[in-house]
Length: 407
Image (cartoon, rainbow, N blue to C red; front, side, top):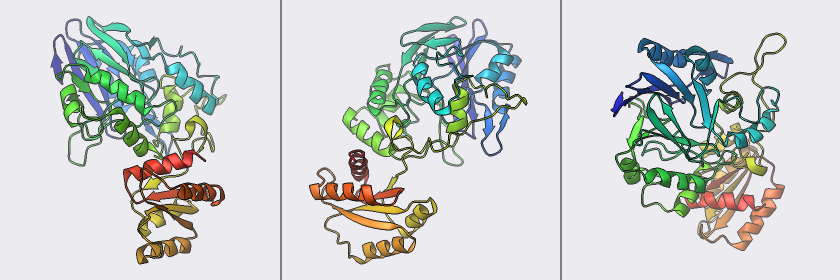
């Protein structure tokens, strides 16, 4: 529980999704707001429960608070919002970023759920634009549009000294959120974080997620000064070009969040599971073969290719088990493909039924034309899906991405 002049912030942590929700209280009026609530959802059984949300309700009712707002920093892809449920229990207006309409245009097209998901964003009571203000009781809130993770991401500036940043930035050891969702942009995220870094160093940053090791308490709060000094991906000395290359390389081919289908679908409706069927049942729609396309604006989100640093027999086993049919291995050109280790790996991959090729790379910064031509040829001819392995570290992953996107 963190005090501030005239206000109090109470965090709630959902261990299943590693998500922080917050109740922000105006001590003068006993009015409050809820930020980034969580509905407990089991994707295996399709069971929705309200344990996490009920903790928030119990806190508000026990302390005789009046709820003014239920607000979201963005449309979450890793957990289902409890905003719809909370609104029915504790009242208050709902709010999200005005650019939610851009997000809705894409995702409603994927799920084809126009019948119960308005493209206008009217399912939310308030659509906030950059610079908008509102109050929690008498506590002032200013809205910053901080896109990059998604086009609609917001930071809520409460009392001028508290930043509720959503997924824009993580704890210093963890870095930042991914930028490969539709409409995401590493360059935009860099610019958004610079806006946060312009606040005084003592300004508190409230995180939406933390992923601590076992036995370590999750971190819900840092400061601007801590982030500028210690954030592993974007401390004060990191240039935009460095961050963009690192972030895009890290994001390329990442698996989608396991709750992306129920989360995006329901959160676009304020956390509602949608209109019931004639039989009175609500359903989550699963679009078949839509979240593994390698084309258009979706290509970086769920590529059917992925990359790793070191090729080993265990990794080949994993690739085979995942259904990959081909391996492309970039290797330093001073290493002969006939070296025992390389030859053994090629033979092992063949035994597993995988087509295996090796392409020489002398410098990760200057790919030989012959390698590019070989890559283009194999890319067109190899059985798919393909997995690419780059032995030379992060720069090699960038090369793999760049070369693939030229084809």
